[in-house]
Image 1 (cartoon, rainbow, N blue to C red):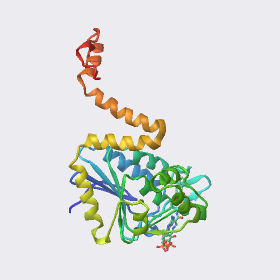
Image 2 (image 1 turned 180 degrees about the vertical axis):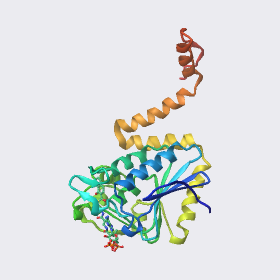
Image 3 (image 1 turned 90 degrees about the vertical axis):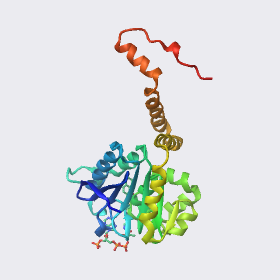
Image 4 (image 1 turned 45 degrees about the horizontal axis):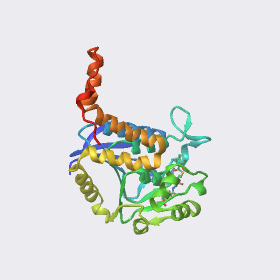
Amino acid sequence: RQWVTEHVYEDIKYESYNGIAKITINRPEVRNAFRPKTTAEMIDAFTRARDDAKIGAIILTGEGEKAFCSGGDQKVRGNGGYVGDDNIPRLNVLDLQTLIRKIPKPVVAMVAGYAIGGGHVLHVVCDLTIAADNARFGQTGPRVGSFDGGYGAGYLARIIGHKKAREIWFLCRQYDAQEALDMGLVNTVVPYEQLEDETVKWCEEMLALSPMALRMLKGAFNADSDGLAGIQQLAGDATLLYYTSDEAKEGRDAFKEKRQPDFGQFPRFP
Ligand code: 1HA
C-alpha cells in the first residue's frame, strides 16, 4: 500500500491512499504525547481531510507500535494549560475533539500500544476504534492532576456505561485490548501485524456506501449527545440537502429575479 504525503508537518504525518486520509502523531520518543503544535497541526490536517472531496474516511493513529497517544505532553504543561510557542496556556485538544466529531466523514482510531489520558479520549471521540492486540487503554487524570469531564467522561459513559466509566476514571487502571473489546470500548482486536490492513478494510467498506447516508448518521448519533450543537449539525445537513432541491432554488432564484416565489409547484409531503 503506497501512502502519499499530502502535507508536511513537524509533529504529525498526513498521508492519503485511495480516498482514505491517515493522520499519524509522530512523537514516538514521548509515546506520541501531544504539545500545542501537535494539536494545531492535527486540526489543520483534519480540516484538509474534511475539505478534500476525494477523502471519504480518516484514520487517526500514532507512530510506532508502542503508543497511539499518551495524552498532553506533561513537560510543557504550565499553569492553566499546555504552553506552545505563543506562550499562552490552553487546553487546545478540546478543539480537536470537537472537530473530530463535527467532520461529516467517519474517523477511525487505529490503536497500537498505549491510548492513555488525553490520548485515550482521542480514540473515544473517534467513530470507530480498531485495536492491535498490544493496545492498552486508560485514564490517568486523577493521578497526574487532571481530568476531562467532557467527552472524556460523559461520552465515555455513553459508550461503556456509567459503572465502567467511573471505574476507569476513579481507579486509573489500564485495560488490555480484550478487556476493551469486552466493554464495547473498541470495535475489534487484531494482531499488530494486521492492524493497518484491517483498518483500511473497514474504511474501504465504508467508502463503498452512500457518503450522504453516513454523514446523516454521524450527525444523528452526535445529536443524541451534543445537545443543541448536535442538532445544529444535523439541521445543517438537512439545510444542505434542501439547498440542492428545486424548491429551495426557487426561493433563491425568485429573490435574485426580483419576483414572487412560486412554491405552489412543489409537493406537500404527507
Ligand atoms: O487530562 C487532559 C486534559 C483534560 C482536559 C482538557 C485537556 C486535556 C489535555 C490533556 C490531558 C491529559 O492527557 S492528562 C494525562 C497525561 N498523560 C499521562 O498521564 C500519561 C503519562 N505517560 C505514561 O503513563 C507512560 O509514559 C505510558 C503508560 C504512556 C508509557 O509507559 P512506558 O512504555 O513505560 O514508557 P515511559 O518510559 O513512561 O515513557 C517513555 C518516554 O516518554 C519518557 O521519556 P524519557 O523519560 O525517556 O525522557 C516519558 O517521560 C515520555 N512520556 C510518556 N508520556 C508522556 C511523556 N512525556 C510527556 N508527556 C507524556 N504524556
